[in-house]
Image: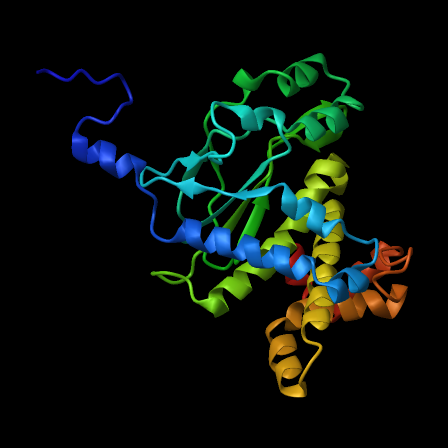
Length: 295
């Protein structure tokens, strides 16, 4: 029997098998890191430490660990077959080696994104794109680079003169640093990276609008919030033996330094003014010698 392959289809059984198999243990790391992040966010002392500053548990509920095939294509969550994810606030989380190129079919904005962006969009073509899934084809998401631990990414579009909005469905990519099945230490690190990037994802979804000339300021604010959340979570988890506290907090030194700079100006993260005076906080972070977090 002659097998006829459609254009773009695998040309052999071996290629088909390769295209449907997952790359390494990336899914395991994403899944286990997300599960542990949930456990951390549900701890009463973590919730008390964060107060109302971050809807962390709610954001984590919208994340779904996804597989990446050996052909580098993200597979949507199996809980939402046949494109059901398009009408859900569902955001993909993957784990891949550094510089691994991945294409995703999940770029169409979520319902919450469409509502938030459409309220302020002025360009008719931008509004049309928001509600047309065909306008968001299979697209490449930026790879995690060697110097990065994880990234949150969303495509932006022009919605009004001088204004853009993060309107593409956000993706979170963790860098899988070591081959093989992840151990407990790697899973814990992944959980903290998920928590950090979940803060960025929440900003993309709920505060998507920015002035083109103030993009760097937008990024700086989100980094300060994300690192401060990491610091608050880490302090809450480290409550226990002094030895554990010292080791754990040393591993989160950058987050601690960022939050110390923020705290010196605005006080507790649970206060209503935790992220006021943002220009002063940015300057204080730079004075600490860790301004690289803004790049």
